[in-house]
Length: 115
Image (cartoon, rainbow, N blue to C red; front, top):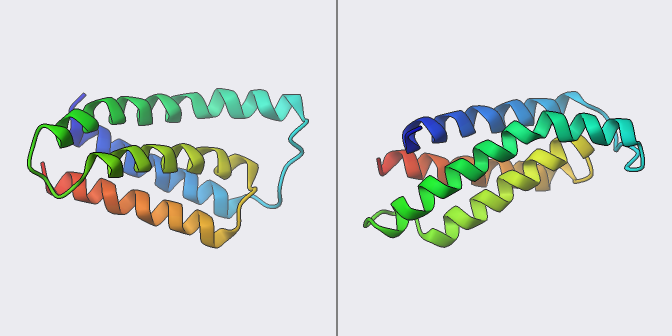
């Protein structure tokens, strides 16, 4: 899949995660094995997508003169992974979640602008 397609899919995915975060209520019991299995099953595609995006985006940024730096790609990868987990465990304040969400979108938009 192309970087363009991956980036658009990732943007849509973090929008879905954001909606989930806003829809759900309260922190969950981290010792609930059933919930853990549900989270593991539902988040696997998100983690696969962000990993695939990172593997394509990092060389693209390193090999071209673009307005995105490789460390921004690494940070965005990590931020999206945190978004995925926080969207299920609801263990972070709304402002922190919003910062992760907005910064991820910002870098993804910068990548799209450089394609």
